[in-house]
Amino acid sequence: MAVDLSAAQAAVLCAAALCGGTVDAIAGGGGLITVPVLLAVGLPPHLALGTNKGQSTFGSFAAIVRYRHAGLIERKTARISFPLGIVGSASGAALALMLRPGVLRPIVIVLLLVVAFLIASGRFRPREGEAPPVGHRAGLIVAAIALTLGAYDGFFGPGTGTFIIAAYATLIHMPLPRATAEAKVLNFGSNFAAMVMFARNGEILWGVALPMAAAQLLGGFLGAHLVVRRGDGLIRAMVLVVAIAVVAWIIKDFYWKH
Image 1: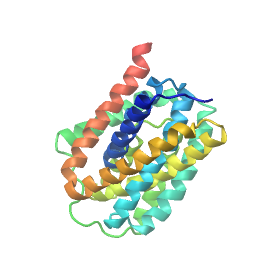
Image 2: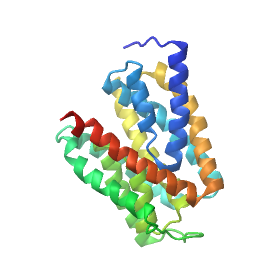
Image 3: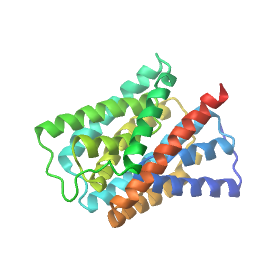
């Protein structure tokens, strides 16, 4: 399918990709910006989702490069989370062909509201300072998180980045900047698997995705740079906003229509 975009539409898509990449690098949820814009310019839902994965994967990669340069990504953790994120995402996508992803909506809403409450009330207090290297027990937890949330991303998706950050911060006691950086590695793995599957099915419009990918590269790097410079306060604020936004999106997208 070919899509003829005006210069104005292309500019809007690239601006959305820049904003989405920035937000996604900080707290996840960049798709809340890019998917509606892709739909607004006339892409059918399946092509909008595929094209979104095609372009957003580049933003995740750029964020990882910046986080790695800042020393916020531990190689041992990445070696666990990246491949298992791929496996989990592929498994979740296969499961989505057999079950209705909508069954998760009420659970996701409750969990995101819990995350939002903990942050807003000040009860969400991960470790401050440097996190210790990931040992055997923490490695097993990382593996479980990668498989579970990778599968969730492939099966349903909304709020994945937020859940990964919360899981790393609470279960492994990572400082928020480190949790955010490590989350992008896992998220990159699950996004990469989804991108390959969409591409194999011809559901990515590369003529649209590649210009957006260039903007995503800049946005991902910018978002990661802001996290490195601003730290906890920025992450808390953005995770709170994204959690509430995802809940609102799920309610509007499903319950409002029924």
